[in-house]
Amino acid sequence: MTLQLAWPWLLAALPLPLLAWWLPAATAVPPAALRFPFPGVLQAAHQGPAARRSRLLPALAALAWLMLVLAAARPQQVGETVHVPVTGRSLMLAVDLSGSMQTPDMQLGGRDVSRLEAVKSVAGDFIERRAGDRIGLILFGDQAYVQAPLTLDRATVHTLLDEAQIGLAGQQTAIGDAIGLAIKRLRSAPAGNRVLVLLTDGASNAGSVDPLKAADLAAQEGVRIYTIGVGSDEVVLRGPFGLTQTVQGDLDEDVLKTIASKTGGQYFRAADIASLKKIYADLDRIEPMSKDAQSWRPIDELYMWPLGAALLLSVLIALRLAGPGIVGIGAAQTTLRGTGQRRA
Image (cartoon, rainbow, N blue to C red):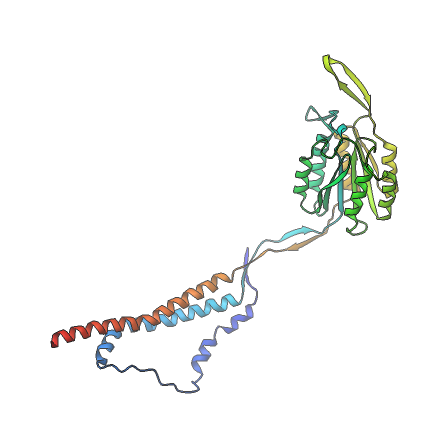
């Protein structure tokens, strides 16, 4: 923390009262006078306090002027340097919330978790690492909707992802709608920095937009799509009485590979937590974060403190100037009463 003056040249105004003191008065104005029948009484009443005030008032006036000029020079408190990364990519993260995402075929910390829980854990870390990128979140099922627009507030996007629940957008999978919505949101971003990471565990079976046509439109708009297929090829379902059943996954890898290929992205397969972590590490390498940074120092204005002190000193000076007349008149009245009583 350091202190500085924004306009230090205004300190040149400090000697102005001295110049006004040295310059001769243009016209002589006779002082105001009040005729009083007993001038000696008033003079005696003023002699003590007036001598003390004559020394105090110039000091208060000088200090008030100093505070006023200091406030005009704008004192500031400058904080430590803050480095802010230059905004890099505009990255939309599209997450599937269809019913199949609750399949517990992932291992996290030695326990079985659903595919969505695994995605939340790994994608949350990925979001936190993307300093300098604007990140948005799209959730899709029967339809797609924007949960978080493009923003630099990564913590909020992370929180909104953690709050996502299975079936929130329906039980089916509208991949084409998710891509179309991402294109619409990324259209205003700088060309060359538009990225969509689409994560799903099933085939597109809902929505009004064909996924491959949406991919063609994304290629025209310069949006690179990285598709991630989640889940194992075969899912073991446990039924009552300990019975198990093996079900073939419905992931349409061919469509996801084609989407990525058309847009200049890549397709990844995440069968477990380890492979999912590796995918996001690869994305950090393929789409690196911005290394450039802008620096700035926070500035707090402090002019109100000397300005307030100057105002307070002005009030004290005004009270001091008014004090002698009030005290003197009171003393004179007391003296006159005493004189009148003695004469009586």
